Length: 207
Image (cartoon, rainbow, N blue to C red):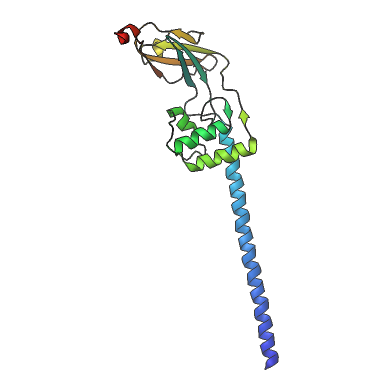
């Protein structure tokens, strides 16, 4: 009887050990699958970060000094939140401030911040960007088209444009203007950028 009991105990131990091994194997498989999926996800995200923003081919930036404005146009990559041709800590800071609601982003920067491509801008995009910059340190890339024509118009319609190679315009009248840029080689035209000019009359202020 005792021999049978010992035999049953041994069998139970062997079966239990086998079950434990099976569970460990299943857990390892799940972990490995999770790591593989995570790696593929990161690779896919990195591909997106290293690709150009395809919803709006060319983005226009405007800087003003008195009655003279300067226009620059470029193609930007996802995650280049500050649109400076480099993906680095500045983009992390800008996105973090936006998510914390301590600063604003313009429409283009918000779209560039959808780093994982899920249609939302949230902490997941921030974490993805942080991981990417941590691994790469920073990434510089060329934002400029080979040759660009520029237009400053009072109409929100590029068909009325008198295209010029100069990116500097002097404004003489108060009003709302629309700025366009056109890639000479691809004929791609940017969406209109609205610019409101209002010259300050200092003599009236003094009075």
